[in-house]
Amino acid sequence: MSRRNEVWIMEGSKLSPEEKRALLGLARTAIAEKLKMAPPKAPTPDSPALSVEGGAFVSLHKGGRLRGCIGNFSSTTPLTRTVEAMAQAAAFEDPRFPPLSPDELNEVDLEISVLTPLRRIKDVAEIEVGRHGIYIIQGPYRGVLLPQVATEQGWDRQAFLENTCLKAGLKPGCWRDPKTEIYIFSAEVFGEKESAESE
Image (cartoon, rainbow, N blue to C red; front, side, top):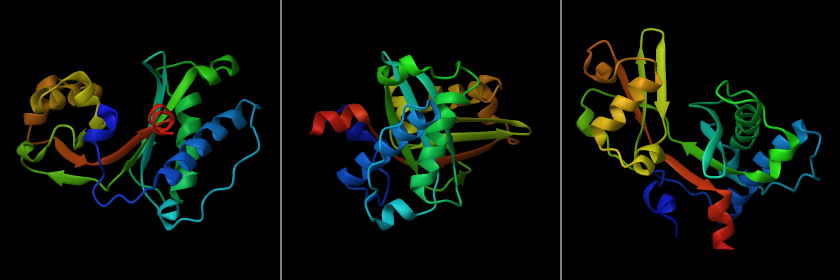
């Protein structure tokens, strides 16, 4: 089992290996459809867990480096549709990267983070590195880092907070400002690499 799968387990998660593979397949097919390279769509399991309305992020990695990441915290569409939309957005609409090209499709691996609802906190001691992601709001500035980022970077709680401030375009100590709203969330994180290793 990879380090990634050891640490981030969404509270109450009941996604089976089959459901995870289905979501990853839907994400890749959605990107391929935009590139006019779509294979026939595989049937989606008839699963209540895939029909819930909830937030999700989709990340693309190429050669171990981030190639796109976009998501949302809530949705009024089933998880399957949310994942498809976020996959296309991560591939083609992340302003940090050029749109994914057809030649890159087979060079990227996908990772999905299925989120719990946001919970506002008053005390940063509630943040558990490796379990929680952070979403910071101050006026028009907003920034989010997923739970896996802190563990991958080896950050402690303070470094995690400071880097979330920077992601929001604010100074590192913004989290100490009473005007700053801090929210946390958990996520179930799974990717194509882990799926392939488990087969």
